[in-house]
Length: 327
Image (cartoon, rainbow, N blue to C red):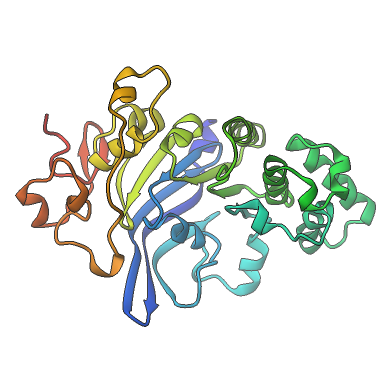
């Protein structure tokens, strides 16, 4: 990461809160999240399903549903996307920031050739380009993600899962954005293809000097590609730090459970005592008193249920656990 890039905040979230208005009452899906992604940096967000990761992603380009109320600032390239005019937001999408959605099978149009789908955002944001110029750009994008230019004439059903995911990444790069957000980009892929996709994303960040925010429930995936990782539980960040720190030396019991759920090959302790965590995250409508993780925590004590712990410095990084510094 260059010195100039380190000072450039492509995405800055400040005390972001997202509440869905439902027939059963308010549902607080995200509760006070701070997050920064800089140029040339990969930032990961980890957590189980239901912890608020995808809701957080939806705010980056104001894609949240109408029943969602967003508080706090979500700044992309220095502008708050929650307050900008529709025309400015339309210009920002694809060209300033783009999203690789979860599940390429459901994101691609099954009755259009993939080349046409990649070309669509280019035509919208660069209407003066000739057809030949757009076709050349599509071929370059396919080759950039490791596919033959001839794949432009393929329909989605003619591609493997990994190839479809590469097409989605090519679409995200179509208008040369500075920020890319990838929501579970390796879900449903086998481990070999998953490794190829992660290598591709890492190379793109390095070669294009863009910023990448990647969402995953798999902490080992994030440890392999990210510079920094934030762990979310029940809508808030409970620990953050460098990828190596969070994966190898988790301070919060929830982070430790996530890390233990993916044992390392050759780790005899994990082989005979596999990790994991019983139960599910709490319903956002009825959060427990005190620490939201307390009902599942193996280290819970009485004082854990009296007040929700704030993020506090533990060993040089923020952790929301009153027992994090204890032996």
